[in-house]
Image (cartoon, rainbow, N blue to C red; front, side):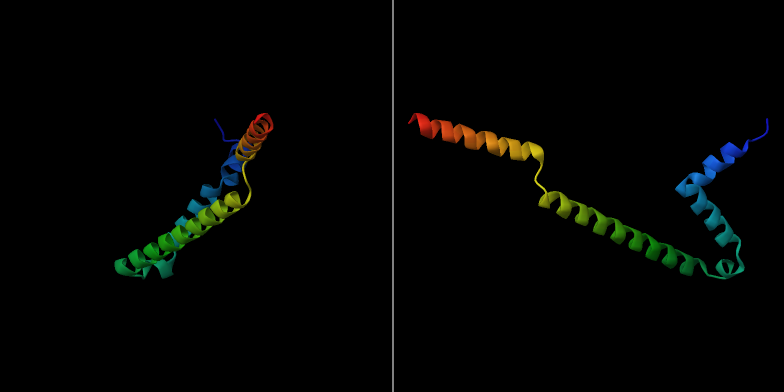
Length: 92
């Protein structure tokens, strides 16, 4: 069976398919082939370190944003506790 254009379009739409294609082109290039194994390993480690630092910054920024906005369940629990205390004070 022939592959349809829809299948090709669906494959191109994914983020990783574009990245793998680019990496394959990079690997076939002459400049990358001239690097020593050590240079390739150091470059790869640097890319991993950059990626991890980016992810950690995103994660801490997300936690800070979550801490700034109280959750609705915590707010409703606090209101229920205050109502309960007010009812106790009214009965005493």
